[in-house]
Length: 261
Image (tube, rainbow, N blue to C red; front, side):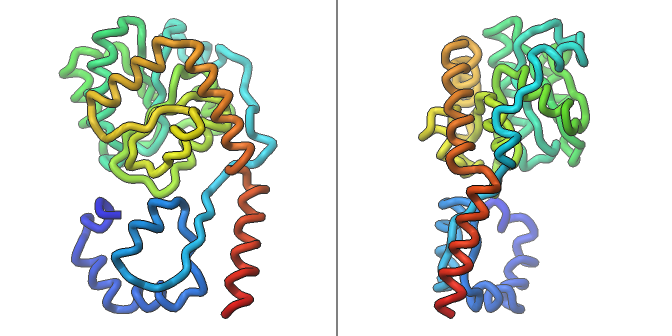
């Protein structure tokens, strides 16, 4: 990915020269997580076959929603207001600066909306908190730290939408988990998950504050749209993103490519 290669650029170039290129070139095949990842490898001209096999969730977890309202009980300061949920590592790559600016726009237009930020600090928390404070909306933002298990599921189940405004993703498990619980998703094109938009399970937009704010407002203002997106997300995960289905894809790839070596 261009964004990833730009980080510690010379170290990565040196790694390719010292053996990583040969390792990739001599593989039976390359397991990539999405179509975009395969296209991004093309400039290396490796000549190695590529197989797209995503990550997933267990079939038993799909649609397994906690009873509604449990997250609001955990955090009564939300006052049952609709909220946008960010659930990921709090790192520059995840676009928290875009999240803060987007929420300032949405909060100005929709007075009751809140923002809930869940995840461990990866170095971007202080900057994010400064941005929402300077925008005057800190009292409508809840930062919980990391949540796991039932607490994470409850956060997804009660959210009006899940938002991940990333600069770069390989394959986001957080997006898949949101879809699997029936939560509408709003993500950037940089997340490399176009199937979300194709299936009608959410909105995929460029990395732009205006585009993110418009999309979030559209989701927040229509309960019918949120319901439809949630249903389509469940259908998408059941069809393509359970570990049971993914194991079939991967086994077929191993049999096909190892037989021809």
